[in-house]
Length: 114
Length: 117
Image 1 (tube, rainbow over the protein chains, first blue to last red):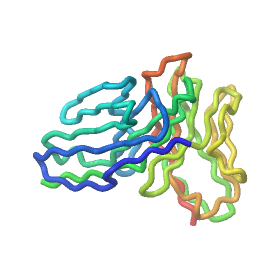
Image 2: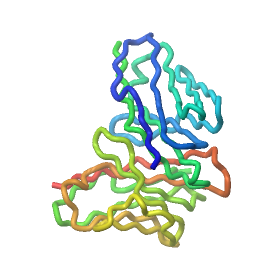
Image 3: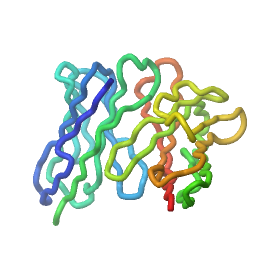
Image 4: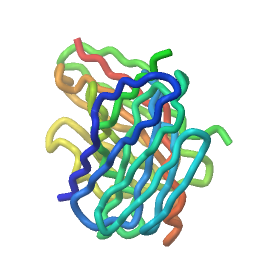
């Protein structure tokens, strides 16, 4: 059974600082997603990572994937208050084929303090 | 394109009542997924449906829960005889998922927050 672990689960940081959120998963996968969720809201897709070594950047967020290590990172550069949210990684096991049956981590609740 | 529409946004039920949650997928999408999110937790897969077919219900509790996606109309997640432990946010997502389009993430609705009193 695929397990997805994120750490840290809670992250409080100051504006302007950098930090990295880690996502480990236990079995082979060919797709990894990062989502953002604001309180009481739905999930907003941030990144889709499809291959080993994939790196994607959007604004102050950069995501990377190492399929051999079964590790993805979400790096935050020069954090701003608007980035405060919960960030989830989600993985589709390789055996799922075309099915988008995602397995989610527990999420990292990020608070950026002014 | 209206996106994935879920209703109601909030639903309050007393123990023992039935809850019906509705989901209309994005236009052109014929694959629907239901996920449940408990407080402070990630989403957990419940069921995957295509029109008139349940493809994978491995995440559904064995009793009281059922789902359908009829030929016409929205997908319905039905919870009979609700208990307090059913209180959660229930999210629906849809995908196009046409043979090998792996780079299109699921599109999630805004969720239905069920509270059982």
